[in-house]
Image 1 (cartoon, rainbow, N blue to C red):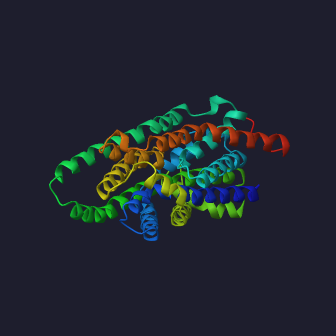
Image 2: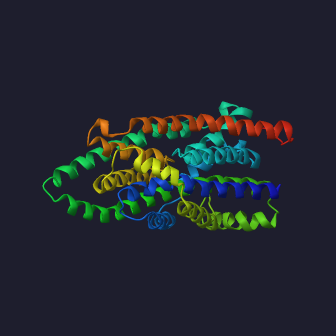
Length: 359
């Protein structure tokens, strides 16, 4: 059992890495498109601020992922294993074809699938799922509205300024907006996998309290936290460092097809002012939701922001065919991963004799 727990945790960490690969585009696509930074420096800049988010944000998003989607009584190592396998498979496929999907929603669908297929819908937490589904619409719309409004304000303020001088200044300002967006990305996406691993370790420790390894990985810290009066959801400090570190490393490797899709595929040309407005709008949404503990999609947020800034130059300047393909990927992600992870779990139960918890 302990071996399976460790394998599952390893797959979860791989998920963090692939999350960084796919969502690297969110942090740096506009910076690269406007040539504010060369690609390698851009990914290093984003990775640094993603990791810094570890020291700024609490684990509210991790708690939602660990305890706010399905009933804790249903969760065991095999449910999480099926969830992760389905999520990683979907992210890998979409990254290969250059579709900027939501790793967050892939993981949500991965958790829903096994529980729904085997235990039934009554063991899903409707309020938590509804909140996540609602922000599939709210986060890109908010990003689009803020990106459009902010860009309009800059257009009015800078209308009589020299274009070359404005572009030069705004490229420098993009370093700030990109850093802010990367912080928001780290504060949101950096926590999602750690929430799943934390609940996995909590379940394994409860089943094997005498295991020296589980004591070392989870038990000692949980007991110390309880003794200090910190009750409720607990994430070991070492796990925070590992998850944030892996998502930062994944960002450095980058999903370059996805970066091109977001940087050049949504608008005919993104200038430095538009890039700054898009990133700043997305950063506001991500930081706000991270503080509130709502796991949102950084992909949805930045895509909406880029479209909003593109609209300032006219409806026809937005590449709506690319946007349509991205939206279809959003719509399909949760249902697709629900089916994939659910089928994986059923196969584990029926073909490999995985035990199902009696509730």
